[in-house]
Length: 352
Image 1: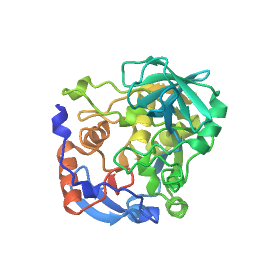
Image 2: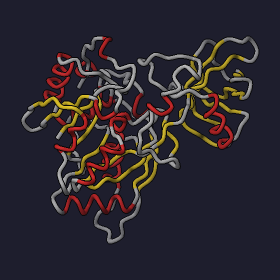
Image 3: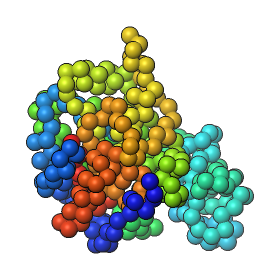
């Protein structure tokens, strides 16, 4: 498989810049992976495609305002630092934008925070040491940090300019104790509290996993041979009770329906490592770098609710593995013809 096989042309006007309001009024393309049949609905119609006895798995990770705009302490030149994940002490792995990034460079943010570049990791990331410990830095980010919107959404340096993104770019079901994502699990953005209640009322069990979204989700593929791409690891957690619920649902013939590629990779990684023959079910947690592309045989996930993904992305490869590449190619062509809204703030697809 070549990277070019996962390319497609998308008119720029179909890249969503703002979310749908209400959230569940976005459009929904429903794809039957066995027949290739397509139906066009709205997201609130998702209830009609869920059945009593199914389990719906959501990623409850919370996005934090990981984007910092600063200036070089010596020259005043503009720099941007994007916190990726915490390392130790006051050190974070970051993406650094701007000219002149090098070890020893000090960057000041809002006259309240200083970061010193320690090392180029040679994988697109840098080690940066801040003058605040993790807890104090996270509190400060709520005041001076920007939500980590992807580059195809209009970016503004003023923290007040897109204040609604603090809530818009966050799922309604996130767990305040599960802070760690530097990009939203965007399939979950379509749900409202009312819609979740309707789903539960139908007899669908709702449960949660945690994957802190990082470079493993959104880093671009830079190799022509897809199989040689190396995923960045991301932290996941699956409770023992969630694993038991899934096993019970599967035993009764119900379906496991994941919301988003992050929930999908979390469960598939867990099922690769679980000892399902053991009489004791243990929670699963750790760093995972599972890469799912066409040819992959799913071990636990039956259906997927997802957004429309970027060309040449690992996310597009995952949905192609779930539905079949020909079906996905056809669905994306039809979505473009029907002028669906694409990417993070865009419309949704259900593959069943």
